[in-house]
Amino acid sequence: MTALLDIENLKVHFPVRRGILMRQVATVKAVDGVSFSVDKGETLGLVGESGCGKSTTARAILRLIPATSGSARLEGTELLKLGGSKLRQKRRDMQMVFQDPYASLNPRMTVFDTLAEPLVVHGVARKNSEVEDRVRHLMLQVGLSPGYMRRYPHEFSGGQRQRIGIARAVALKPKLVVLDEPVSALDVSIQAQIVNLLMDLQSELGLTYVFVAHDLAVVRHVCRAIAVMYLGRIVERTSTDKLFSSPKHPYTQALLSAIPVPDPEREKKRKRLVLLGEVPSPLNPPPGCHFHTRCPVAVDKCKKEVPNLEEVEPGHFVSCHVVKERAGLAPDLLGS
Ligand code: SF4
Image (cartoon, rainbow, N blue to C red):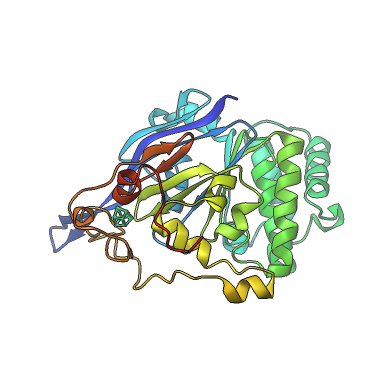
């Protein structure tokens, strides 16, 4: 399997400026040395609480915000160094689906104009009849009636608006699509329909996805691999099966313990790991392991030394002093 997307040591730091002279007084390390790769046609889940840097990572890869350093290669092409026309050309291959479909669609543009724009800008369809055929096909592909193509975003439901957003993202048959919390703003009843649509489009068009989510339950059935982020760093990365069957990082264990189990008997007996406190501010993260202020098994070393993300079992990467010292064994926080 070949990696379509390769991210190495990606950093996105924002200067904090204050005073009349706007002097830099601090730095927010929103993304601080993130590495992962995604194979062609696969989906990687990027998961963590709000403010962990997952959406910033996604936006930096797509060049929507500048990265501070590191590397992001799409089929071997370094995206972070591209400029001008080369970047514009490459944008065709990488698209994004946003969380709020209403905010991401121009309220003054009809569905036809919204979907026709990328086709015309990139010269994919020129004649009016050609553009209309493509728009018609795109609408059918995402389960919308082409009869609605002259309508405006406010005339659609949230789920339908997200379908329009998805149609726009796949209009140019991109290689990579970053899905930034694509179902979080939708009713639970609609979420499964949109997830199924995304999976159908993936197999139909051979798309590669990075699926950003705050909820592990959402990505479980969609992703082959998952990277869990906490305050700008990846704390655990492995296949979805391994992450759910033997989570090693205390933070991952806490996230998993929050997912309800459908069987009421098992749900009653289940041990939950409730984390105390909020995620610390990225402006002033705790030293050493960023998680030590909330970690139930933290040791002295955790307050001073940053744990590296290390392979503790084949294909299973964890950033934790305790897991490393116990030769890859996870702390038994949930009971076996
Ligand atoms: Fe907890 Fe220490 Fe491991 Fe961080 S390094 S997760 S604080 S045990």
